[in-house]
Length: 401
Image 1 (cartoon, rainbow, N blue to C red):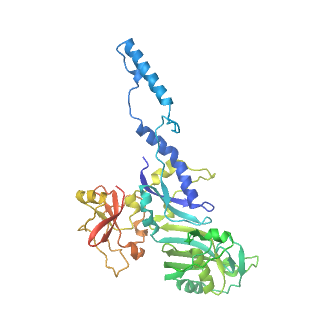
Image 2 (image 1 turned 90 degrees about the horizontal axis):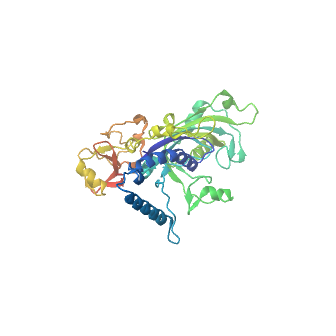
């Protein structure tokens, strides 16, 4: 039965993040309905199949059935007629961070109670790869926009590209692009952009953990054969949440003394969720796959949260945390030094039972605001809650049990 977990989906260009959620709901709907229907149907002997002691009893039974049928067909004014089919709870699904419509790659979905954990998945480092088209600027910062400017591109070496890109390592300030889903004053920026409006946006701090920039090939280095003057570089980035790769590409182009835009953006990973392990929602013909293709790929909440330190609680503490009560800090919790950024030395006492790659969970790059996060497990390695330390106590932040 589908209850709770994460699903790493391989989003394709042209599909919105909400489209992907709708597709998963459609795929799982029949599977969930069949499973829950079978569970709700209790094996019971039908009245008409029971042996009756006498004809009178049979008549009495028929009379009762007729009265029940008649009563069932009558409803009060304004009351909806209830069907005899079991009610199937709507499947709750959310995503851990929007991918631009033209982009592809990893989109982590939370199903059921796991949707409460998505904010922690969103906070994990992300890896991207894209083409940086130098020499041409667009109004959206990517290849879907209208061309707004052209500038010549110098004869840069691989070393020149790398040197320019490395200037953006560490904490940087970015101004969110107008063509983005960010809200300013309660309005989505892209909606204002479609209306031809441009408003003031405050710069935001993001972190670039690693960056690589190089020519795609000799043709890209020397300009396209049609003499358009464009040159294509390959950009690979590992960054914090909230980073706009389009803006980063434009800024790198400016550093090189030209203009540019991003093309073929692909998210390679979100923490330990890698594109190699993500599932396709469509087959080669473009049809949605069956539930049997994605149900085995569901990842348990505990494994999905493997990037955070995990602590097994005693039965007594499990009961307290499950009821929203704070507990004394467990002995097996190592409190990180506030001055340290890395929590890579924190050991997990749970096992990784899924195909998530713990070595790719990037715990060393967790934002400092996320270092006071602990995953509380029971003795069966089931995720009970996500906790934080405050006032020398272990407080539940999100309870799943």
